[in-house]
Length: 74
Image (cartoon, rainbow, N blue to C red; front, side, top):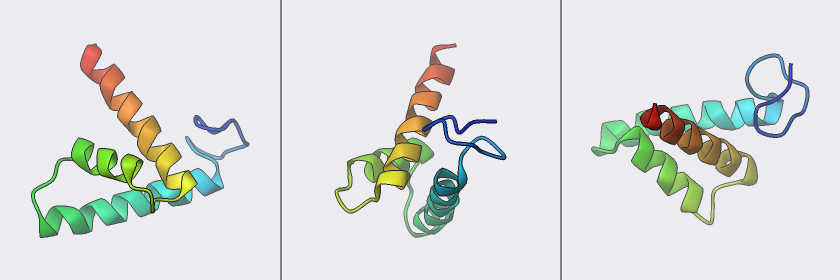
């Protein structure tokens, strides 16, 4: 199986680095959601444009945003 983002070997949807970034995004969203009213899409958009977000996190956020957009078109 290959990572859906970078094509590296993966045991699931993402390679190890992108999987770690995905888990970090999920944990961060739980905290943000408790602190303020923010949607999943808004959170991902904030991550994607934040200059302090790391490369792997930005990759995952961009992938998830594209996936959301594709689902909305169906």
